[in-house]
Image 1 (spheres, one colour):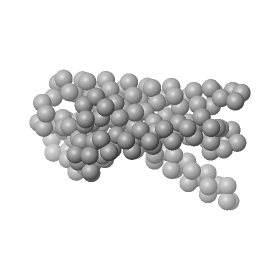
Image 2: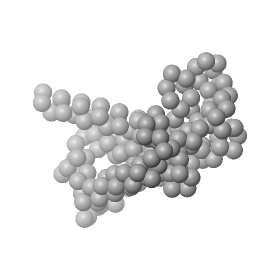
Image 3: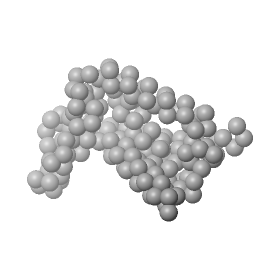
Image 4: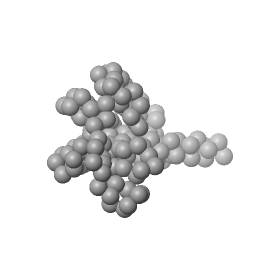
Length: 165
């Protein structure tokens, strides 16, 4: 596949940066916070609260870390396989004018998923610490996954609508 590295290089680079940022933040907060204790940053709005999440987003499926790990690995493998098979290459998914935005969003999603998968493999749980009080505690990997999914969805929605016009 000529030029294949350029097509996925941005995705890989962004994914690696997301994993590094995520893992460094988890090391920092694991070493400075006490498990299940909150430190108010903005009282009654934003706290830092270290928890060990054995479930998926928002603590759903708690205690099923092995099953979640297997599903995560399968999902990541399918995404990587799709990238490798040129599904996201110039004639496919990433062939539109928003190529770079889609690469960034996919890099965010993959990096966040790998960051949380690393926790599950190392510890059997995911380290969470961002606590907005009205939302379950989460981490930077979760944030990157969410931001990447929103950007991707928005871009696909806008592209689909503008292609129909």
